[in-house]
Length: 140
Image 1 (cartoon, rainbow, N blue to C red):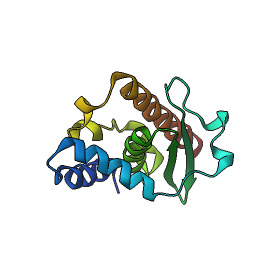
Image 2: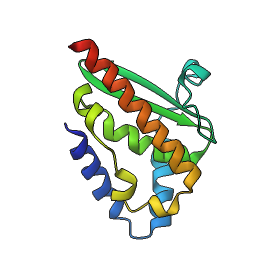
Image 3: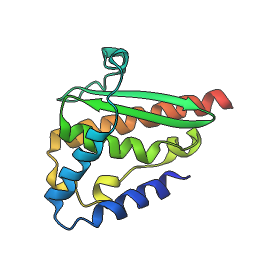
Image 4: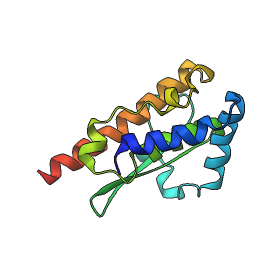
C-alpha cells in the first residue's frame, strides 16, 4: 500500500467525526488501544530529540516494508504520532522516504494542536523519513 492511500483512508475515517475536539479525542482512544512500546524502546536511543514531551519511535524493516511504532508520555502526542506512524507503516522504504505526510491537515486537526506539539510531530516525521532513506540506501 502507498502512504497516500494510508493517509486518505485515515483522513476519511477521522472526518466522519464532525466535531474536531471529538476527532482529537478519538485519536487518543485509538492510541490507547494499541500496545505500549516495550520498555527497551522507551529509552534515549529511541527518543525523538527536540520534542517538549517524551516521544519514542521504534522503526523496523519487516519483509521489505517499514513499520513504525510510537509511544509518548502524553496521550495527545501518542495519538497524533500514531496517526503519522500508521501513514508510513506497511510501505516500502523508497515510498516512505519521499512522502510528505499531511494527515493532520487532511483530518482538519492542525489548528487544534499547539505549535510546540506540531514541531515535535514534524521531528517525528523527519526521523521516520530518515530511517526510510537509510533502509532504501542499503537496498541499492
